[in-house]
Image (cartoon, rainbow, N blue to C red; front, side, top):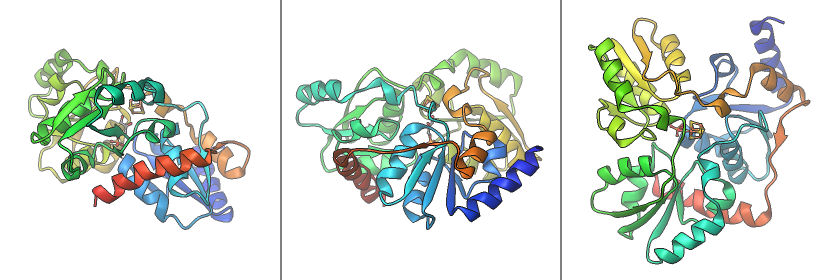
Length: 305
Ligand code: 13P
Ligand code: SF4
């Protein structure tokens, strides 16, 4: 079967079977082309609650599918590939978080959305990279325990200097592979290019960026900018998507090592099998997790308005 033929079958089957396909921006372009919605973590979580279809297929990683299920409990939610996790989400469990809460009892616990839904049951609010500064500003308490990504946390702290932050030693191992030497090399090779990075990158990398923001933020910036060349400091799939969106501009990966194997797991074939009903993991969460993690996610949506 040719790519186009498989895509046409997916489009036909998703309609026939009343399936909404949500796609994170790091998925491959052939998957983007069959999506009902493509976006960053924040956009996906808002879209999940709005989708009219009975089944939602989440093409991304596990914590994203769990967020969709929590926001749409009455729907059937499928994760496109059951092996697709997030190395950062697995860094912190509830037992360790409870120890931290005992250490910092008067702090509001803010979790990056890249955490398990079980962890969210023990947090006050979660944030995404695109919503974090606004949400943290809207929290009444000026003491914040931010978990698990200390790099994203440092970026938020710089934008919300009126709050005091406690961090732990966590973060995205994929973005942590981007070194400041890579920035120097890329800038030397492409002196006219603007540097756009995801704030999961190390602070010494983010500090040199012309723009730092979520995957959608990076793409919107590149599309609306008058500049013609860009160095992209996030998962390298974004380089290809931007090249399709802006064929007259040039995009270079900041590091060829910035590849998330979990995000790359889902193939168009997986999507095809999911809409046929022969693949995909149905997300099931306990009543307790559905209720308590929802409180954390709803607070994010409320404070993000
Ligand atoms: P976004 O919220 O920017 O989509 O980021 C999700 C993610 O996993 C980045 O590594
Ligand atoms: Fe998780 Fe990092 Fe992959 Fe994003 S890029 S899904 S944070 S491991």
